[in-house]
Length: 119
Image 1 (spheres, helix red, strand yellow):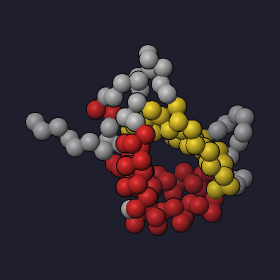
Image 2: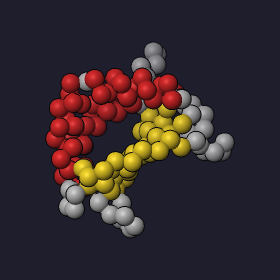
Image 3: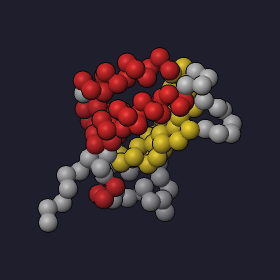
Image 4: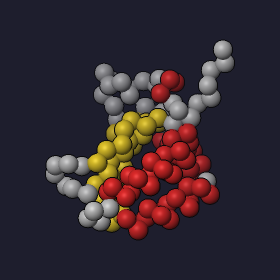
């Protein structure tokens, strides 16, 4: 497993607007496609006006496939046009979970894009 950390630096005062738009529109598009949300955060101490979100993937190939699906979705393209003006910069990192991390192994129950199990 890998975890992608994405940090968006926003214009001063834009974090609340960004989060409101994400919760209202972006989350419903992104979560079923990317699947394994590790978390979504805003900064309180240190560099301010930043949003940090993390997504887990089996490997870089799965990340590329899921991100390609997301970026080709017309709903996502329309959403991005609304939030991009709020952003100043973006930083991405690929993190490798330690062996004892809950994200070190693939847990299908954490993949929100997976089809529900038949009963």
